[in-house]
Length: 297
Image 1: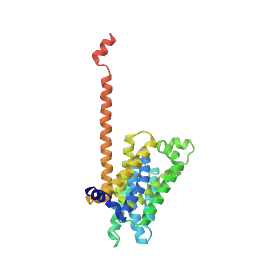
Image 2: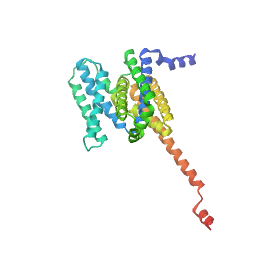
Image 3: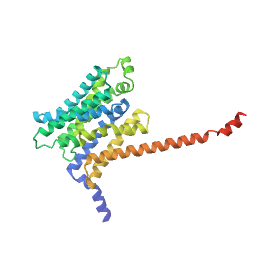
Image 4: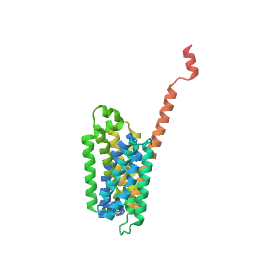
C-alpha cells in the first residue's frame, strides 16, 4: 500500500496536461540550445547570445502593439541587433564585445521603457522570465518547427559551420560561403531564442545557450561527443528541473538553470581534482633531484 502511494506520488506530475506540455516544451527547447551552445562556446560568442536574447524585448512589445505574433517581433529585433552589431564592427575601431554590450543593453532598456507605457492584459513579464506552465499546443508545435529547422541546418551545413567557427580565414580559403554561414548561425540563434521565450524567458535562455556546451567542453575535446554530451546534459537537467519544481513549488525555468549551474560546478571541480591527481602522479614518476645527480655521475 505504501509503495503504491509512493509510486503514485512520483507519477503525479505526469497526470496534469500543463505538466505534460511543460516536459515536452523544455525537451524541445533543450535540443537546439544544446547544439548551438557548442558552436557559441567554441566561437566565443557567449556575449552574442546574451545580446540577441536581451534585444528581442522591443520587438515583442512592438508586435503586441501592432497585433502581430510575438515570435515575429522577437525574431526581427534579434536579427536587427545582429546585423547592427556587424555593421558597427565593420565601420568602427571598437571591438565586437564592446559593440554588443552597447547594442543589447540599449535595446533592452528601450524595451523596458516601452513595457511601462503599454497597458496590457497580457503579462509581458513572461517574456522576461518564461511561463512554461502556461503553454498551448500551438506554442509546442512552433518550437518543434524551430527544433527541426536547426537540426536540418546542422545536418546539411554542420561541417562547413564547424570550419567557420574554428577558422574563418581558412573557411574563406576553402571557398565556403562565410557570410551565409555567419548570418545563418545568427538566424538560428535568433529563432532558438524566440522558441525558448515561452519556456525560460529571454533572461534565462542565455544559460541554456552557454552552460550545456561549456560543461560538455570540459568533458571532451571531440566535437561530436561534445554535441552529444551537451544534448544529454540539457535535456536531463531541463526535465529534472520541471519535475523538481512541481514538488518544491518553484518556478521551473530558474530551477532548470540552477541544476545546469550545479552540473557545471560539479564537472569543473571533478576535472580540477583529476588534473591535480595526474600532476601528482607525473611528479611521483619523475626522479628526485638527488637521484638525477647520482644518475648523472
